[in-house]
Length: 294
Image (cartoon, rainbow, N blue to C red):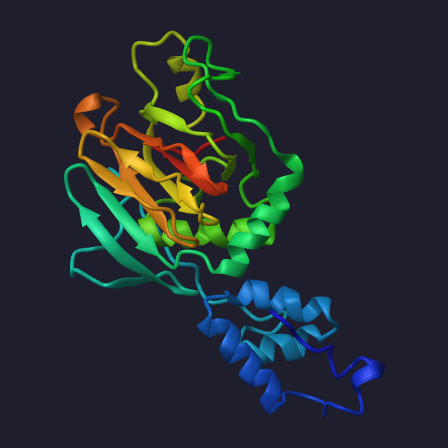
């Protein structure tokens, strides 16, 4: 994504007239067509010196001080669930259309395309990379965290809304899955090198474990998982559902969603990350809770 400096900048005042230009508007159209959302474009334009007013005018956004368009209302139902009632090929989430590639009812699994642009994937990886450490899992015996030999990745968590791009993604997910934004845990980014994997497991918290009551105080049970692929390994690294059986191959910008109405193996949501055979794998995971997560 490349953008010239603002006409307010002395170095380009002779080259660009004041106000909007055909070149700027074509650049905006090209970026929107590639899937980059208005919030990211607005930041990019401000970063190179465009005035807030001109940038908002080019992006057809409200001017400062004006009321923004009303947010999409997501109402809590029994489970997070995309609106597939009319068998759509895509779902409009406000700033892009997310493709519906695969839909399975039992277990509830949906594979999405175009959830993130390639530029957004790269930006999330770049923001996460300096903070990566050996991945931890929830310790159901104590309610804390622990290293699990079944998971050989490195990872980190963003706080909800920590950065602009994280906030934009979380809003997109809320609209896509019709689940309140504050019912989601922080976005986790994971990196799997050659040979790294995550053996099959369930994401819900086992009711019989001593640490589960402590975990549930922060927002109740997990009821859904969204795994987002930030890059493509050369070989391996698929998300596997051995009981179905199903294998979802990583494609940058795509995602796989699955929900589980109760914390029980009968939901058939046993899943894992197959070993990376060549290259590396980057994913982002969003876990969804019954109630507000705090």
